[in-house]
Length: 294
Image (cartoon, rainbow, N blue to C red; front, side, top):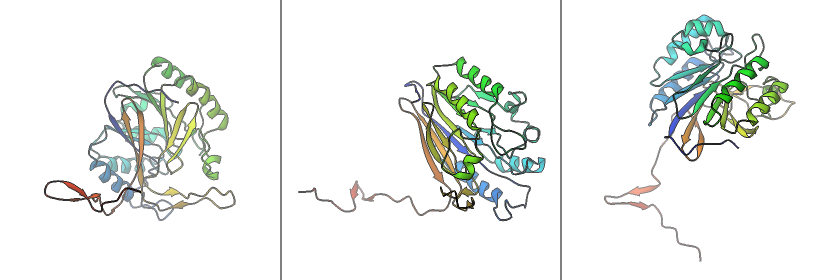
């Protein structure tokens, strides 16, 4: 399993994914108000205490790769009161992304690809671009894998999180596994990651569900969508579809001495929180006393 350090302080990373923002007024699939749902998520993130040190948006930021969609995305993300990092997905178009969100200068760090590292946190982040233009499936050619291997070799002892859109594992969801990362590329990635036990986690999007799986000595985690979720159905005989479960996000808490602890949050108006114990003037007392077993 991944190594971690006892040194440092706690750190909180929020992750959202698969926003699928369209032009103002347009609905995804003619019915999903992805912009309105993202607004709910932004409000929820801004109320978190403590506030996350960082927000990662792990791909499919918009729906059709249009400049107007990115302009809308920029406006929707503007109220966030935290640092934001963007990762491309298969619905994204690198040039339009860089042009509309030019303030995110790190998007140009990887040349033709949107690769970059984040060095000023308790945990190092390496963002890896898995996008193949014109294709839903992801890929990691030799150049991209070499870039990752070189970055990992730079700081082999430092706890590191790799972020990429396409998960390198099968999830059991037939459609998403057909449209995931190229299997040979995933095997090549595994050989690199296995040599670096400091890789604490690989964070992904793409599948519109929170999923966790072992991979090459570490763990792959995927993020729910801020909009529509993939229907949870493992049968190959049923057409894939989406379901309007509540929008969600992940909170990754870095705990010195433990490592990365991940919580899945859903967004909505829920009753509570309520105390487990009745409040009194002087103490908290159990609501009902439970006698010990004989």
